[in-house]
Length: 456
Image: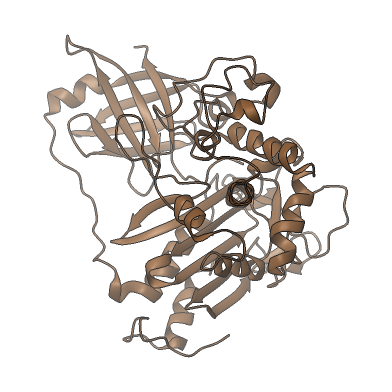
């Protein structure tokens, strides 16, 4: 259910060539390039499925690797994968659909729909949709009712699975149906998504992939720890196939599920009370990839990682579903990396040139002040994956960061803001009026923030 991230600290048959696809590479040439990206998925490893959509047509789809290593069952196009946080776009769509039907108002306080939530008159359904409600993450709804909010609604954005669990409860309260039944009757069945649904462990589900993790010590794969989906609920409990996800992708270009204005709202970045825009809409992350607007979302749950990358201005999408966890990293890149590299193969001619960030120069005396140990303040699940203490060192004039997940250089974006190469993590050092370094802030994809206090 964790948001799909890869970092050292915290841890998707018609071969006709569309005119807007890169003319310098043949269809067969592009397919070979895509196959090379998935070379880490073999008969001895977990795998993935990929689908590429352009102008309403499937231009490529393929399955790689193994769905069940113990039985030697290969991944197929109809293999069902856990979606993890890609679930959130379906939850958001259900809420917006209820809004379109006049059954709720997205801009109304949640007190109308969750009357037992303390302070529900101060935050809206839209705050939950955009992760701007201040609801702490990785806690249950009952726990959320007993703890303070992290910030005033609309003031900041911090990704909260718990907030999307609350949206699932709202769907049930308003519709009078279970979350599972509502999605089936109002989204999956109308779109012909017959291979999608709510993942119940006890159900015999044909073509369900098993989830795995990579063990760097043994250079092998192990079964991922079991995770029950009941607690995950509307934040990440769905499963699907790439073909079904392709049907979902195409529905977002019309009005079969949502009114055009609601789709536009889902894809619009939220504006905070300060006037600053965050890169999240309603169940979707909005970003720039080599100059193109990408509306996408990833998922990361025990033994699975997923990504849907939509480029609406090019009417182009890539969806990758994989049955191996993101951490520790293994031979198969993350679904996010794979989807974006596939997009580059097809859209390179309309993308801006790729640039390698090398950092800016910072006074060595300033860098030396950052060296030390920092104690992380974050949910326990984050601490379990990354460790409680982070070590910052200065080595050969370069700043390095180290956690239990490994060691990585930090490249300066400014004198106080640093990036971890090859990851979506930014580190901002906090300095008081006296010039003393007091702590740092980890920012992941502009959707999560965790603080750490300098302890030595």
